[in-house]
Length: 217
Image (tube, rainbow, N blue to C red; front, top):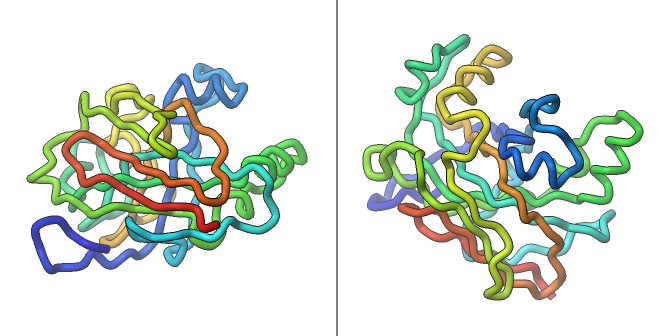
């Protein structure tokens, strides 16, 4: 993926995602943030789509949803990383979008089956240019937002995440050995909604380059 201010490229190794990491989104999905803690799931590395792309409307869904997210790109990793050392593993940050087959997700959830086919499908992980951490600073009060056809649908602040970036990295590293090239999509605020063929999407986080994509007609 492209790196801001450089001709270097960031090689993507794996994609980890955090679900249920904004309290209002947990409520929006019918859950309770006190009893429904954030969860992890994955997408294949080749689900990545760069900003400016046109994406085909996926098969097997009639309810495709957008989910804007802060993406963390790792330059190093390890197992059982302490939260106090977690930010030392971060290369940079980007704006991301997690496309979701919402109808299929609900069907699978209701049957207590894995979410994979509702989340880990082709072209399901959009990402903007990665900004090095030293240029972006620390995730804090920055605004995060998404527009569809010029109409705002999602807006929050990164400080509203239930788990902070250091906590996300520390907890995830207890399950897997993180490595350079791993991406972490850190969860979406409330306001998720459907996308139709022809929709133009713009998503941003204060201090990062805007992500843009469209759903092909």
